[in-house]
Structure formats: C-alpha cells, structure tokens
Length: 83
Image 1 (tube, rainbow, N blue to C red):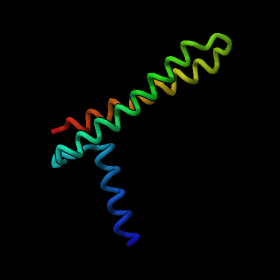
Image 2: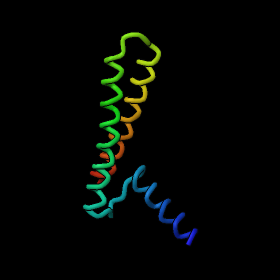
Image 3: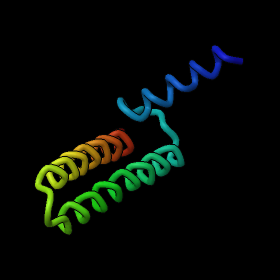
Image 4: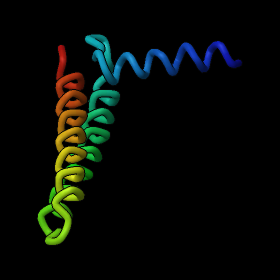
C-alpha cells in the first residue's frame, strides 16, 4: 500500500543520510558498495576533467561535481561504519 511504501522509503533515506546503529551487517555492506559507486563516478569525472584541454569552465564544473560525489561517498561510508 502507498503509506507503507512512503514509510519504508523514509527509513531508507534516514539510514543513508543519518546512519542507523541497529543496521544489519548486510545493510552496511550494501551501503559501502553504494558509496563506492559514487566514488567511481568522482574518479571518472576527475579523469575526464584532467584530459580536457580546451574548456576551463567544463573542467571546473567536472571538478566540482567530482568533489560533490566524493563528499556523498564519504558520508555514506561514515554512516555505514557508524556503531
């Protein structure tokens, strides 16, 4: 039902952004893998920014996005390791 789905979505969002001391180990492992996806996107963005020669604006945008992805990844790993 719709209210149950909203309630479960809210609990997942709270786990992602705030962490949960009662999370199961499989949930923590999944969150670490999810954060690695953001770290990979940051790495790819920084490599693309490094290879660009023409546009300084595009390079700056990619570097800012890579920094945001690293921040999200660090936040997720911190929440996964929270005990």
